[in-house]
Image: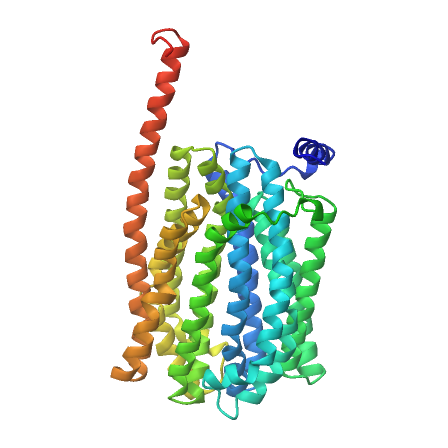
Length: 484
């Protein structure tokens, strides 16, 4: 089948879809309403994810400090796996939204189908590699003899679901990129509800402990991928996903990879940062590992809703950039910055004020609580900058600005944090460990603020140039200026 016939087939398939499946108009001029309709489901979805982590931590925490420490030490591995899915997903979402904005739906379909085709084998390979080296990884992370067997019990059940996790992440990005954030939200809500119901049954009623927590998470992943499969097979979205649309052309894969690579690397750096953080905490004992794990969870809970707002704006940003509508991109940026900064500052203040009752949800150990309270307060001193850093990264990804995206996104968990967490604890002990997170948060926020101001200046120049071209075209069409 030649290219023209293939395009006709895809067009006829889309035209055959029921009108009710057409989603939010990404060119809607009522930007606040459009952004909130897209962002709020994303916020709810990721907040559900945060609450799910919170419930898991509460259930596991009731098993003792060693159990919560073991699960916390497994998190960097999950972050590495999620990083790959996020890298593929971010690159795909940017690809889809920009091509939809440019009016090229066929290319958007090919990008989505190719991304899912790549995610499955990558997940299988990574799962095998991690399972084979699992014990050595935990030892390298500083797992103590009391924590190691519990961590192995948890990870050996959770990791076989890694491929499902990758496919869920990529599918979620595809669905959100075409404007259907509600479906993604309901999928996450379904998985959360199932996990919340199964956790106490498996952990306590069946007496499976951390293995029960891992089993509940695995089953919820199966439920989520089943819903995404139904979404694509029933053609509930604008973008058609099918085997016939998979294209392994190097230039297309390169476009997906260039944008996704910084996002993937950022998450991998976050995993490495977590490894260095827990390894540094391990020098001081199990209670310190558990306390740092609690502080990190509280930090993550605050970051997820902000990330949800940013993800919700990604489709509009990419669509506007693909259409070369600089004024629209600027309006989106200003609106989103006002929201994300407000959220991050408010959450930071809330954690600092209510640190003790929040920590009390995770641990009933007085020693762990005292350490976790001070850790949480220091970790959130400059969390107000996270709103800027998160949105600027999302905006750059939506625009396809891979290199600049890397500069901003690598700072918080990479070139600022890792040197600090390796050096400061040696100089100042556990206090140095805490300061390393605060310093990285502050530095990353300042870098993001500088880049944001530069981008705003670029948008203004682009808007002026676009307006000048429009005036010239108007004068030519009216005959005032002769055609060349």
